[in-house]
Image (cartoon, rainbow, N blue to C red; front, side, top):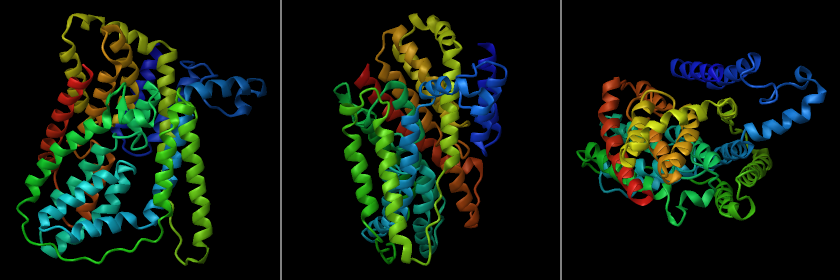
Length: 438
């Protein structure tokens, strides 16, 4: 148990120190655990020649329980669909139309930020910033104003909405895997409004804060040419995925195979469609599939499996018995705001992966609704990453864009926008979540 905890902490420190090659650091921890037997050799994926042919069936059985292949399939299939949606030019088209219909530059900025936020519900946050930022930069260049507020606004708004639905971001998938949530559970859970609606209320508060930075830009934006849509097929692929995932609970109530199968099949179908369509095109699309995150996600599942199998999670929950006499509201608040503070400086994915089993056991011991603490961890950790430029990868991308634009900003300049945005959005979500699930 001590070795398992030490390995996980070592991996965590490695992820804090280095923002690159996260998958290699995480898998290094898994392999180290194998070597020193913190994990038995049947608990992780290894080459058959290392384990011996007689162990292949045993290893396969443990892989199915240790690594959540359903979530891995959802994420991988979504990557293909996201790339095709970018290829269709629809994000640029929608942004162009919104800008042309805005009455002032400040409102145009707000519309672009809101669209980026909605777009990131379905797409990766980094991809969202990279797609939408050029439109915002074009507007600021024409008007001769600073792009800093709107580019930072794009990053923090994208991070906010990534947790709203099952396929939005990795933390949502980890939550779904832990609590066995299906696609519709993110909208209504146990007959109550779920995380999607809570996030939207927080987003409204956050947009209000951002508009305070935009409102001084009262000049009218220039009319920009509307980017034509190449194809509507990727849009309909997204619609198909959403419709099929809405039936997940009927076919796969235990969240074991349906979602991953649907996303992989639709993603593969979209890939084949692109291959046929692009035969006559001179410029081929450069697939930017994030295989590193796929590998990282698998390693996170293996590490959490290690903690659970070696009794680390159970031991920590036992230590939390001292909380029995505390107010449930104070416990809930400490988890939400503690997650905000921690995620402002470190990667939230391993944090969420470690915390979800803990709060699940804590909820049972304290007699609280499991959704209250689980949703609280998700909200706090995802929103906390908006405070600092190192809290989320999308923030670092935004900083890089501003630097290339000749507008490098300091750590404090980012916090000046990110902190009030986070406080407003988190406060609203924190209060609403308590009243719904208390």
